[in-house]
Length: 334
Image (cartoon, rainbow, N blue to C red; front, side, top):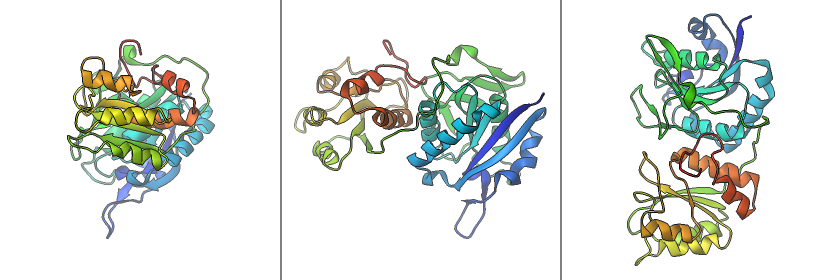
């Protein structure tokens, strides 16, 4: 019996067409079916249109609806491929990793740098990789791009125009395509640790703040007054924050004492944060900041949104950030 794969189209460059307003999503999934069947021999494909959006116009409510839809239909398929625009693809794949944790089939998010209608596009090759990963039988949420497969919460877009647009940050590839075919690195896969049910609650009252020298610490007070429940701060180097002249750490202490969750990480893309090395990190932890360790920015932001959707209890929030939920963090003790 052929394996059944569902292709869910959300839009993006892969399904785009030319218009007077520039490239816009325009192709339906059915329009792409003939091309997709060319790269999916011995598999049965079905398609579904979830939306037709540039990924800049995909928001948290769309993540929740997409996760809910995947949860509803996953029992009828061996795997699911989500076609998505590249600009916010890593945010979507990260949030799906949390919302769909312990799913029993592969869910593979992919996109392209050129429309599937373009003669030299990367679209078909990315779809080939995604479709065959979806048929692999290895459960989880993944990103397939440029003949590589990554954990959904480890992928990040690192190039704007190259076909090699995505990399797996601080975690090895899950699978790669070479002359030997699709080779899956089983040691890098996650083990199912519980019963699956979509967990789609979230809070969008989250802010991403990148520190720069001289930033006014009162920005945190402003965010608290505006109703933000959490902020992810990308600090310097290993995650340090200033406390002289402009006492940013003092402001962290002030807002955490009043219920705001402050997650601290590094502006550096690779190797992650460690707030236990320098005084600028140790003081931040003492002030109430939680550590992001080696999470990507996309995973840190979406995990913060997801966790704040599960609970308002400060101890439970701390507990969520002390554990590895979907492969998003890998540090001693996490």
